[in-house]
Image (cartoon, rainbow, N blue to C red; front, side, top):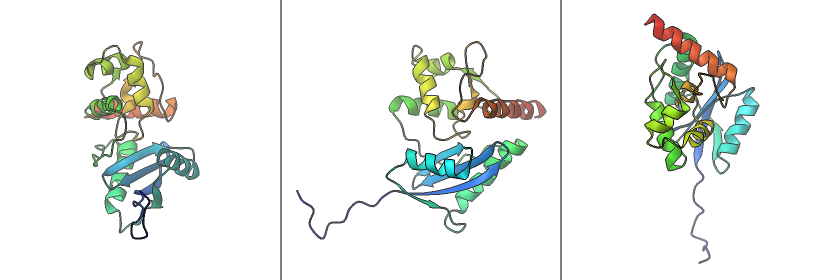
Length: 185
């Protein structure tokens, strides 16, 4: 049925974002109507914006104003303090988007405590799919919400770092910081 003059096109999703310097480099956090949908490290603010654009090609992206998104600013401040000082990681509402399998992986990881690590095999077992080790690793690689969905806590069976979407140096730094803070507690 053709659209008549009185019908409007559906509104585009609006996603607000902030970019800040962190101890691990530039960090962008973005939120839509349902919560944080993106938290990533990058090499530059421009690279982060490009990645956000690729992840949400149909969305209207705009920088968050202080008044419009005091919550987003607060979460960024808490995340930066977590990264730099080992304070508790913020727990904002998350807007997880993925397959049912990816969601199970990410929800399981979100329940992993600071300082705890597990292997890709253990992760697959925890979600009830012990033979889906590679799929669990792929779900980690597809994670758009770094640190808040702690894929950095997943290691290879031999204890090696494996991979990390934002670089092995960042993964090692996150694990080392969590280990130090857990030891100090």
